[in-house]
Length: 160
Image 1 (cartoon, rainbow, N blue to C red):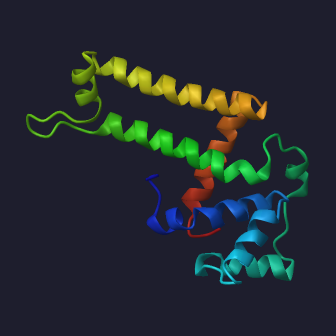
Image 2: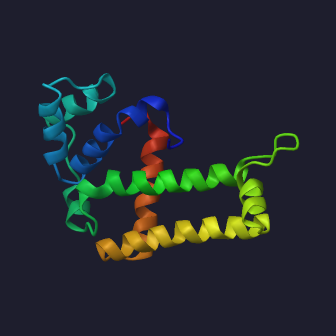
Image 3: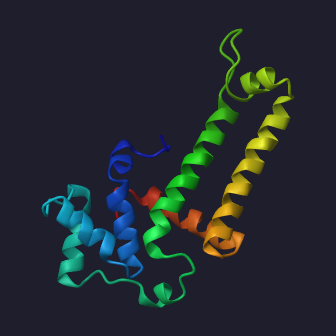
């Protein structure tokens, strides 16, 4: 599980759909509303009301500069956040008595030094971001910017 508030984790589809809407792609959000028979989670009611009233508008200027389709923001950032959190959890996992955990356990099992396991995890994250940048034909920095935006939006939760 991604290190998110549990309710945000449950509503990631809504979070992603609203994010896509903010960049001019209404399809995900309209599909979710239809799929849920018009029932909108309480956390998103104000944002949807603002959309309907016209006080919340998509950022057309930013949307015109998009290098990654808005409908992919949530999927891509969610996947990369999951991998990053997994790597972070393995790094931070401490020994429990004589029982090794996380990086120490992996290092012992693979007959490596713990620092080599950490470097491998960092390389794995870097390669994952490179793979995403290759897939969308964007720079590594563009993927990094997307991750920063995802983290900023997550920090604001429950404000969407």
